[in-house]
Length: 429
Image (cartoon, rainbow, N blue to C red; front, side, top):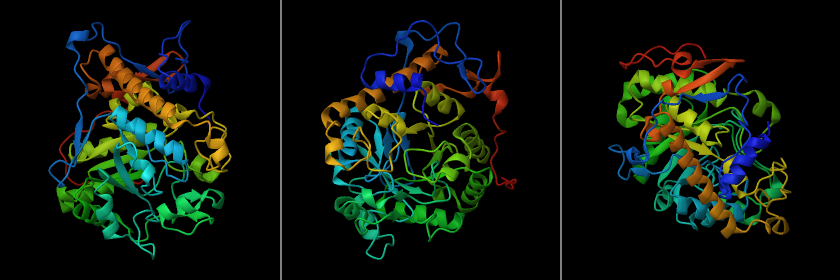
């Protein structure tokens, strides 16, 4: 589903630093089921009582080099190949200036990612692009090299655009340069396996997390879409059986709303839970198992506005990922040609003529503006709820419209589980 005009306009104005002030009433239909309504406090927090939203350490106590993550909003995985070199350069520079991290996507870590000097999360996809040997297997030597640049590693099981299928980059976009970064042959379709061949169950996954963390000394997380209760309950039970050292340092939960990548329409439309249902299930399972402090949660899935990001914090996320929000910041007009190499804005094409409109210096500043304004507005929502900073947001600060003129508090729709921990049987998905 394309984003509506009000949402796109909000992102464009934020990226251009034109302000988010409007006139003539709400752009959001408050009668529409699913609409978000925050619970305003009768006595909001005064300017002098506000606190900066604190950063969080990822992997503290469990790896040699934990990662201090400063921004709530960060750049989601968009591979070099799926997006162009100027787009990667603008995102890298902008992320560095804004103080947020940038996820490489599964296409490997290129020189363009390093250009800005931003914090980087190196994603390990099912084809091990950028971190593989000549036979296509995971390369420990390459992992150690990348650890000199990346602040963390992310093992990608699946994403919301195509759960059950690996990455898709058609031959027209596999240039010599992109093939070199990925470690594959140029001018051929780049289709990665639908899962990691060397990860067949939860014990394999946690072994893999431990291997990468021991090799690199950096935090290691897992990215996945969610189909039901089974995955996260199995994860929690296995961690509790094996010990806290075995846990991933973070989870990136992607909604089934799709994403910036090319994908079969059937999977994009009908596979995996949307983020509104997936995120509460994951957070509740972590809380119930006593693992929420150990494992940080990153939410992803059409969370391009401050209201959607604040919703994720209310549910229990620690950070928010967005890809398409940053594509809008770069100038995306929703031409919906991302996979064809004919993007008219230069964001998802390797055609040099079409890239000319993407001026790296200008677009990098728009990335900065978007991150800063998004974080500031998340804080503004928190202050309006009577909170000192955004990390104090909880489910009781939010209501969800159920039908026209009828809303329900989020903590009643998704009650916090009884805490206590311990393994429990996983119900059917």
